[in-house]
Amino acid sequence: MKKPISFFVHHQGKGHARRTMAIIREFSLDRPVSVMTADPSLFDGFERQIDIIALPDMIGAEVPTAALFDQPTPSVMHCVPMGVVEMRQTMRRILDHLDDIEAGLFVIDVSAELALLSRIASVPAVKIRMHGDRNDPGHLGAYEACVGMLAPFDERLEQTDYPDRLRRKTFYSGGLCTTAPRVPSREEARRRLGLDPQREIVVALTGGGGSGTPYAPLTVAARAAPETQFLTIGPLRLEGHETDFANLINCGWVDNVVDYLAASDIVLASAGDNTVHEIAMLERPYIVAPEWRYFGEQTRKAERLAELGAAVDMTVWPADFAGWQAVLEQARTLDVTRLSELYVADAAQRAAHWLEACVDRLWEGAAPSDSADDLGTTPADRVTSLDLRRGVAHDGARHQQ
Image 1: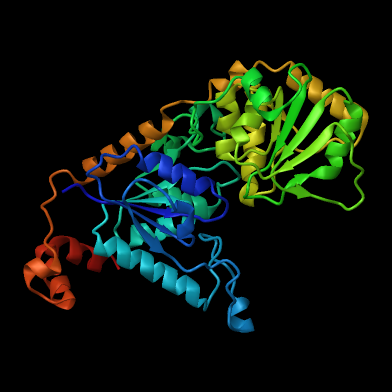
Image 2 (image 1 turned 90 degrees about the vertical axis):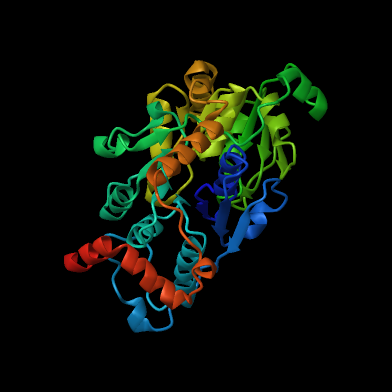
């Protein structure tokens, strides 16, 4: 039987779950797979048979006392409050599950602390790579604790400050997009949506992981480019003093996002992983407006996109007509091949094959383990039995402490 692969999937937004499903779809059908997440509903309707393990939601969990709250965070960690029941239950549930299935590989999307926990628990781990300022002890320790990292993007998009020793243990799948590549032409999309076939259209897109597209700056854009039609998809962040304009239409949440993107001449969007590669797949000029994320994830990614000539970096939203006119003109003159080359149609398959090859390589030649029932022992007896069979490793670990 093949060694199981288990995933931890962060439940902020939908990107982590969609990426996980895209990869799991490409696994061998006889590969046992499980997913641990605080929001199992993210996997509702997933066609592949997998085990879903619900974790407590630690976001917003209270620290019980002021004294516990005052304890400083160790430099090798990022978010480890003291005395939080939900955190203790989460760690126990993760370790129990990895132990119960005798996991061959733990894929973490994402948590630096869980990479350290996995190494301590003697479970090989792979961490999903993200952009950002992550050369702190916590992230470097997590990377070093892993048997490898999976970067769901092109190596050209990698940051120059990512250490060479870690780059050598990182697999770059190429730009991984979870949207089906079957998209309509610009003309067909405009017919479906009832949009002017000739007018320039800018689509401003925000996903579910952020606070929404700033609406006030877009009203300035609408006045700066009255011949352009602006469409917004997803939530908006309002100041309360905006004035609407006829060439600025708020579409809200829509089921057919791809139709809107396909209908566009320019896309203005944040720098989420799937968003970047979705626009690359569609080959549209890209104005990247990075949202605030921990460790400057989107800001650093936007910088790299601009350095590659693949997007216009709009970290600061223009507040005047001339600023918007300059940004739009930059977008119109982009060479879209610089961006489209970063998308790889079979990136999910490449990632899946690499993960399966990784776990198979690590466990090649290992004797099949017996379950507790096969041994006819209690769990406590089983620990003793395993200790006896692995005496050298056990003694070595003891002497090092």
